[in-house]
Each structure stands twice: as structure tokens, then as C-alpha cells.
Amino acid sequence: MADPYYITTAIHYPNGRPHIGHAYEMICADAIARFQRQAGREVRFQTGTDEHGLKMAQTARARGVDTRAFADEMSSHFSQMADTLNISYDRFIRTVEPDHYTASQAIWKAMRDKGDLYLDRYEGWYSVRDEAFYDEKELVEGEGGVKLSPQGTPVEWTAEETWFFRLSRYQQPLLDLYAANPDFIRPEARRNEVMRFVEGGLSDLSVSRTSFDWGVPVPDSPGHVMYVWVDALTNYLTGAGYPDDAATMARVWPADLHLIGKDITRFHTVYWPAFLMSADLPLPKQVFAHGFVLHRGEKMSKSVGNVVSPDELTDAFGVDAVRYFLLREVSFGQDGSYSAEAIVTRVNAELANSFGNLAQRTLSFIAKNLNGAFPDAGRADPADAMLIEEVVVACAGFKTAFDDLLLSQGIEAWMRGVFACNQYIDAQAPWALRKTDPERMHAVLGTLVRAIRMLGITILPVVPDSAARVLDQIGATERDHAAVDDDGWYARQVASGVTIAPPSPVFPRLELPAAVEA
Ligand code: ME8
Image (cartoon, rainbow, N blue to C red; front, side):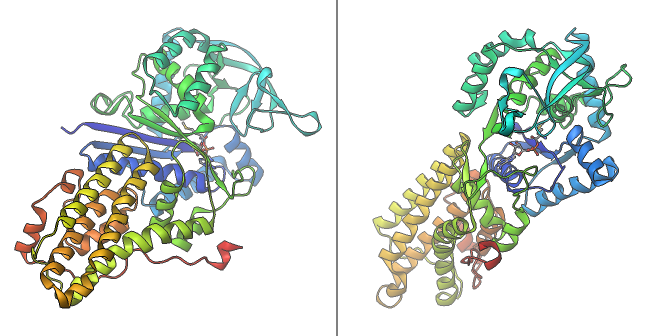
């Protein structure tokens, strides 16, 4: 059986509509999932919504609607967005689902049986917006002297009887984990932050609430629901079949990659591994914290209200253009900024005018001048082999970079292959050769078709729909990584007699729409 690869996104709070940050996270995870599938891994990819907690309960109450009905409606916007963005998830999990209750209660009991849970009185600060407890020493002062969380959100004083998790016990095991696995937390800046935090000492964590009931009930403890992060993190196990589906668990757990945003690193790299150690479960192999996508350099969030709808962007520019832009523009792990102008500029320069134009002018020339027949071998020139070599290097560069989650660099490497093709086509000028040297023209066009196939396969994880259309135009059906190096493909196409139909452009030039510009 193929080597499994389990990748997850954070599960998103559906207390408002999805924004471009949520879209970004799904797109990055999807590109990685598709890339790993192409590499032959048996990928399991999970995304979903995180529906419990005070923030959801309060938002529903403020709107005067039933919390569950509100969660149902809002979660559907996230699953619809995932479908619009062509996200190849295997499961869209909702934390209100019965098997998730089972998993959350099972990990709870395992932690309790370990002696890591005890009842006590909690008194301290809580941010509903972050769904997080904070120590007094972490708070900052806002306008008028009000106390704010380190994320700048309001905090309220909370005092109630709750269950505590003995997080303090896990300080040394966590430090040992980070030391033994330097890649457990990426990028480096986040790893350093987390290590400083854990070195500073860990307080036990309040893990249940009694003042509201919108959550997973704590086993054998009437009146208590789990702290939303306990159940939220457990979603990754639910999706792996925990606790009852031992076969799936054995195959997909531990997760290979939890992809999350930088603001929730502490939950994933401190609390989550501590819960898992407590429950005697294997730890995920890696947590990668991506940066924030800012709109013209400014932070957006549902709670702040300057939210840009992903639908607006995909309607204006197309799904693959938005995917390409985000993956290419933002250096993975760092913050990035977007605007309509930046999307139009990037996509026109690299997709419409470069890869799109390369495919379009090559294939329409063949359709028109060779009746769509695959060019003959013609008369080779060292420039042909040199081009193929450059494209091979570019595609290998993409693969090496993606293997190491250097997504933007991977696309940049691929782009070098596209540029090499465009230089070659300009230098060889096949349209001029048509009259002067048809044999050379055949060789040049054949070389370009080979290059387009390799580049098309390579870029599939980034722009799945458009790259597939280019590959369809040349009848390239084998699309895994191994196919890139398949030297026999061209001869087989010629032998099969398939032809290239007049292509319609796959990457249209974008215009700046007035509505988005405003
Ligand atoms: O934190 N740019 O949910 P959430 C990029 N339910 N990513 C962003 C972003 C932005 N502007 N804004 C948010 C939660 N994100 C919890 C997670 S996981 C067990 C529970 C990212 O809806 C954010 O960093 O607030 C997080 O990874 C994801 O979107 C969901 O954020």
C-alpha cells in the first residue's frame, strides 16, 4: 500500500463568513495535498469548521438564532468555499458531528486516567475572540487603560469551577520534543517563540467551562463542557478514526502536517502535543505556521469587520488566478499582502503572458499549420536538448522546493522553465521557419510540446483546473511526478495519431474590475 500522508488545515470558526485568510490556508494545504498525491502518497486531507465555544454561542445569541441552526448555516459557507476553490479534501469535518464527540470524550478519559485532570477553581482572564486564557503578565494595556490580550483582543475576568489539565508536568517533555525534532515547528521564528514560551514555565490549563453548555459534555461531570480548544484540536484524531477505527488510526496517525496560521501556534505546539503525550498517542510530525494575508498591508479578521470575500475575488479573476497569486506572492511562513492590482499584475505577467502565451501560440500554430498533427522529429539542434534540460531542472526545482514546503520558491523555479521556453520560441521563431526551414520548425515545435507537458504536469497542484486543460489539449493523460521524466511519451503520442485541436486560451489576461478597484 502507498505511503500515507495525512495533512490538515486548522478548522475555522464559522462565527462569520470565510475571508481570504481562510481561503489562503485551504489553498496552501490543497497545493501540498495535490503535490503529495502526484508523488504517489496516499493522501488524507482534512479541513472543516470549529463550531463550539463561547464565541459561536454569543454570536448566535446576538443574532437571536439557535446556536446549532446558526452553526449549520455558517459552516455551509466554509464547505461551499472549499468546493469553489477546488480544495481536494477527503473530509470536511464539523465538530458537532457524533464521531467527534466520541473522539473528544475518549481523549478526555485517557488524560483523566493518566491523572492529568483535576477539579479546581479557575480565576483569570479570558478572551472570547481568541477563545484563550491569558496570564496577567501577558496582557497589554489598550486605550483608556483597558486590558487586552497579546493579540489585542478584549479580555474578561472569569471565575468558575473547572477541570484543569496538568500542563505544568509537560514542560520538560515538550522542550525535549523540540530539541529532538528541530522540524516539529516551522518556520524557525515560530519555533523560537514557542521554545521561549515553554522555557518560561507552564501553568496548568483550564479545560472545561460551566457557565454555558455549547460544547462537548465532559464525561461523568454534569454541567461541564470541554474548553473549545480541547475538542477543536481533537478533530485531527476524529478524522483519523480515533478511538474505534484502529485500522485507519494505524494507517494515518500521526498526522504528517498540521497547517495552521501563526496566531494559533501555541495551541498546536504546546497544548496539543501535551494532550497527546498524556493520552499516550503519537505526536504529529510537523506543525507549519503560515503567515497572515493582509489586505493592502492591513490585518483583516471577521471580528474586526474589514473582511474581503474570497467569492468576490474568484468571481472577478477566476479560481486558479487567485490560487496562483496567493501561493506565488506570499513567501510561505511569512505575512503577505494582496490587492486587486497585485493579482492582475502577477497573473498577467506569469500566467497569461508567459505560460499561457507559450501554450497558446505553440498549440494554435500546430493546429493551424500542421492540421494539429504532432510535429515530426525534424532536424535537431543542441538548443533543443538545452531547453529540455532547463525545463527538467525547473520542474525538479519545483519538486525539491515543494517537498520542503517552500511553495513560492517552487513556483519561481517552475517560472524559470517557462521563461526559458519563451526565450527559445523567440530565438527559434518557428513561424519564420515555416517557409525557410520546415524541418527545423518541426523540431522546435516538438520540443515545445514536450516542455509544455512537463511544465503543465508540474504546476497542477497550484492551478489544477487550468493546467489540466493545457494537458488535455495535448492529450497528456499521465500526470504524476514520474510522468514528467517519461521520455517515451512523445513517440507514443505520434504513434497513436492523436491531434491537437485549435486551443482556446486557458489563462486569459485579467483586467482590473471597477468594483474591486474601488
Ligand atoms: O483559530 N491570513 O479559527 P479561525 C491568513 N478555530 N490566515 C489567517 C488569517 C489571515 N488574515 N486570519 C485567520 C481558529 N487565519 C480556530 C482553529 S484548529 C484546531 C482551531 C487563519 O477561524 C488562522 O491563523 O480564527 C487559522 O489557522 C485559520 O485561519 C482559522 O482561523
